[in-house]
Length: 326
Ligand SMILES: O=C(O)C[C@@](O)(CF)CCOP(=O)(O)OP(=O)(O)O
Image (tube, rainbow, N blue to C red):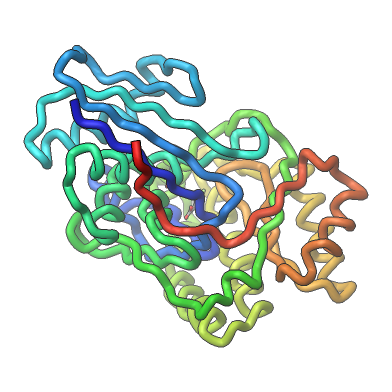
């Protein structure tokens, strides 16, 4: 029996990953850049055991059905194939998110699974190798191996596609992200399905891709200069352009709910009134607001006039993956 455990934190992309060049290897069309956060993390334990006759996956104490277990089992197949192992495994993941809302991202879950496998099988993977392995579970998971800012180098092969930390001289600790849970309903279209449809059918997709290099350069210059407004502006614009591509898909779709639009307007109004803050969204209706820590309380007061305490979650920069003692 070989057992391992790891804790990995979620990350939110400021420059988005939205489209694969290679589905099987999960190679992206473009580089992306994220901030790892401390508020949501996953602890995953994996136990490879000769007595098991199939893989099993327990999430937050509930044994998952075959469909839910597929993503995990496919990842385990990859590990078994890469490291010449024939054992089945039991995977147990615990999501630590302040609320049951579907906030736990596959990023922290699959990153933690990669770390747990490395420990269980004594693979001694370094951070680049862990990032490459986590990427095969879920693209954004490769960024959760690192704390703070990370950039996923798209590469052009399995070997060359992984994330790296972007040193920011501790500036990430001056920032915060306020999550506004506008709707805890199930995501209608998964990020995997949403980006696939967009790449394959959206007339806006090529225009989106053309803007990424410039956005990445701007974001990295902003981080180097600790220029919050420059980082916020490119983050908000990049996220809006990403979501714009879904409107051009066939059939068109959007992740935005009426409440999402309300929050976007509140952010713009707060900014006009002198409170620097910028929003970004992913494959769901919740809105994430990037703000400097010194302005977090003022921002929260504005949102608290419209949303309950449970709907407002504060996050700060989070740490890199941790292998845990069993
Ligand atoms: O995080 C970002 O860069 C942007 C998104 O969150 C926007 F929704 C996409 C994340 O996609 P992911 O769940 O990693 O897809 P997978 O590779 O198909 O598992």
